[in-house]
Every structure is written in C-alpha cells, then in structure tokens.
Length: 109
Ligand code: 2BA
Image (cartoon, rainbow, N blue to C red; front, top):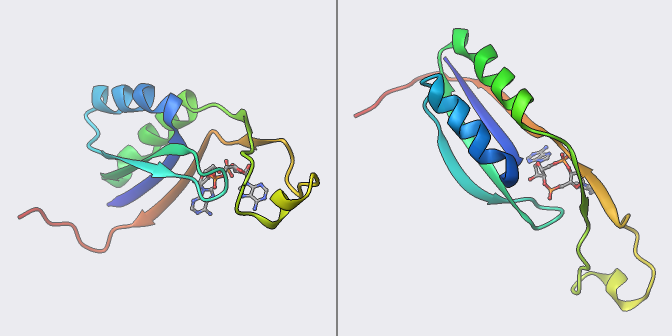
C-alpha cells in the first residue's frame, strides 16, 4: 500500500477530486497554504493499493497545470523597506508537488 500526498493548485482540485471519485479512489482533501506564496492550495492525502498508484498519478498529471503566479509584497520582509525586492514578480507554480510513500501499516477501527 502507498500514500500519495499531492499539493495541487486549488483551481485544479475539483477536477482532480471528481476524477478520483470516478475511479473509486478514496482521498482526503485538506485546505493548505504554500510557505513561499502564502496563498491557498489544496493537499490531497490518498491511501491506495500499489496497483492504483499509476491511475491516481495519471489523474493528477492530466488535471494539474503549471501557472505563473504573482509573488505578494511581504510587508514584514526586510526587502519591504526598500523598493528593491530579491524575489521575481512572478514564479512558475507547478502542476503538482507529489510525495509517494510506503505505508507500513493501515487499519480502520
Ligand atoms: P509555495 O511554497 O507557495 O511556492 C509556490 C512557488 O513559488 C513554487 O512552486 C516555486 O516555483 C516558488 N518558490 C518556492 N519557494 C521559493 C523560493 N525560496 N525562492 C523562489 N521561488 C520559490 P512549486 O515548486 O510548484 O510549489 C508549489 C507548492 O507546493 C508550494 O507553494 C508548497 O505549498 C508545495 N511544495 C513545493 N515543494 C515542497 C516541498 N519540498 N515540501 C512541501 N511542500 C512543497
């Protein structure tokens, strides 16, 4: 058994969730915030048998697209004191950031 933890753009999340449901793949959707942009994204926690991993990955691949997102002005960052910012005005935000881990033990009680 594997656990997929997928951090995806919240704009893509409803499409990914619908496709996972259609394949009968159980998941938990958690509202999350990226550490760099501080903007909302979605984290999907998906526990599934090994043979379903490729199905889930192909759903994530096909529904998550890369986007250029603006970097917000950090008022509490030292760079806010000057007009110079070390950060680019926009960054390319993935698709999806996916971690796949082995599940040592799975139990529902
Ligand atoms: P954020 O942390 O808000 O990052 C959004 C995007 O900003 C990143 O896209 C990357 O292009 C850029 N970025 C992040 N840190 C940066 C830095 N120190 N300097 C310059 N640019 C930076 P992605 O790499 O596609 O990441 C999208 C979201 O996935 C992240 O949102 C974060 O929530 C999550 N993520 C990415 N890598 C992760 C990791 N190793 N562990 C946990 N979460 C991760």
